[in-house]
Image 1 (cartoon, rainbow, N blue to C red):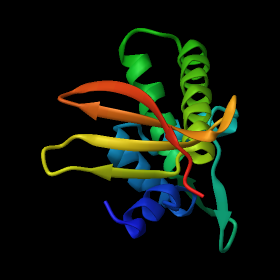
Image 2: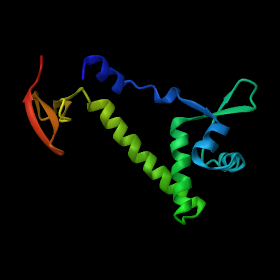
Image 3: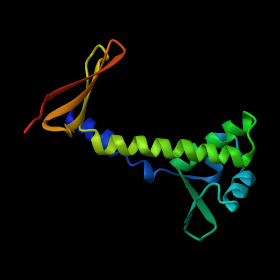
Length: 147
């Protein structure tokens, strides 16, 4: 993977992906009226655009709606599903924060092996932490830091 691909992964503009209520309803199987109800209750949020009547939903909200629906389909109440979806969102946000802060470079060999540079190793700034997936197994190693 070249430097441009690494930068694309790090800077994917997920926050700029917005969808109309009809798109969210179609993608998730949740009716538009249900989405409006969830928004009135404060379970999901949209962004006003243009005349103030049209609303757009972020990609993150689309994922949240899908999670809530899946949990409802599994038998949870709406309140419990919203709570569990929020917990999952918080975990995903923590993981995304980790990747954003630590991810330095990724490379993939033709055989599918992957090497991810996680940057400076805090206890020893002369070392960088590398995660490698070789033959489907993850391993970690330290290498001298690039200056």
